[in-house]
Length: 274
Image 1 (cartoon, rainbow, N blue to C red):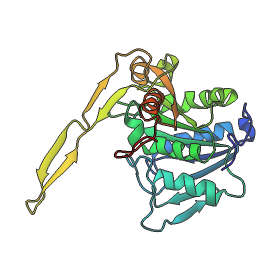
Image 2: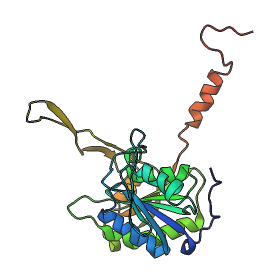
Image 3: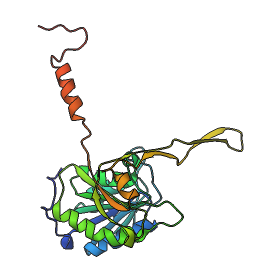
Image 4: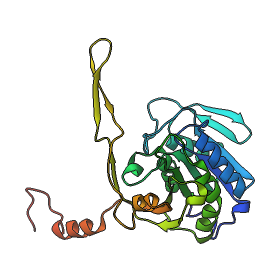
């Protein structure tokens, strides 16, 4: 695995090789927004995205069947797999002779806030890039009605990405960006935010198919707290862009220290100290 990052900070985006991916599929409207953001930053833009929507796939790899790569046009490919599959194949196969210097994932149709990040294919694409040693940013557009305010992401995205890449961030870390449910002109600013609390799936819909066999549909109701200051949920609720660094090492250090003390003799049950 290469050292992190492949290009030294600050990154000159005008010379960057940018890989775009997502989880809504290669034909999604948010992906068109992402491509325009990327082309605003660099002329060397590559696309490797799922053929169909892969929302909620998380950081999953396809291991039980072969994957197909389809060349759509120059520097543009689709994969019949997950967002993780797409980024892995892009970096290790399609672009192996000259790997990307930055991966952008999104723009997701809907926020990836709180615990969403554990389910999100958008965030997972950025995760895969991160573990492969390529800096990555996940971008999502929050919306609540029938219309998605894509202009918020499209107008504010390029300058925000430039600012983040000019500063840089640590190894083994990705950046998660959520644009609020506001038009571009109504966005009040940018806030560095911690991950909030939001859980999908509190409502389970039960019904029966035409043969009378029961089935269950995970509903969209959420338990969330947008009142806690400093969180991503609080930021977007107040009309700000939320920027959250997400670490790939999920070890809980305080508990690790406690366990090290508890298990310091290293003996298993039934063993006796010398």
